[in-house]
Image (cartoon, rainbow, N blue to C red; front, top):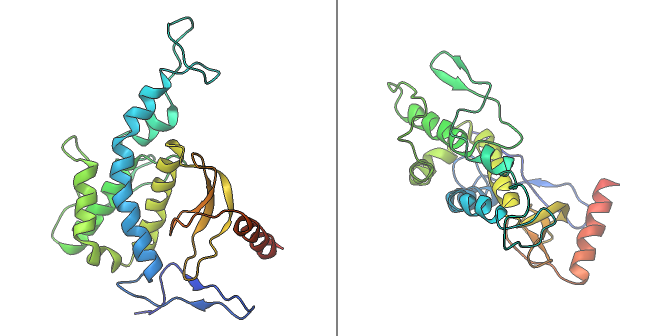
Length: 234
């Protein structure tokens, strides 16, 4: 087995030397990816459960963002991003290939179908006699996340863990944006040693914050991030 991280992670080199690939710590992932994947799986069910509050809060706001005390205008339509995230239908287009169910990830993913696809794939990997089951009304996001965390060692050792992690990241970012925790494009790379996360501006605090290690940047550190990003992009 290749002993470098399946996500091609490298250690940042300050003195201009060649980047060094990060070694596997468990399964097929480096330490940074292990922590990040576990954090995403812990965060997703909490953020998902709070989506109805995002939809409800919209009804108490005017179109110009100010609060209203009586109905003086047409109701504000529901947020389409929240509707997409909570859609339980399999992500389209869905097609069958042998015993496997395939889909194409959308810009705003349908959270439960994507998570269920990966948890079901892991079940089938661990039980070759199992026939893949389609998503039904009895399936809950919480149960599927608990299953992935409970079988975390098997998950990170799967040959497809890199693809699964990429799609779980899309879900985590989409939920984070819906809740307004981050805004705009990344400010730049995290400067903390051994962290390869991206720094976004926290919408509530106003300070840049790493999406991986959650380090908060202020003052000159923010300028350093921007200079590092400019140097990397030429």
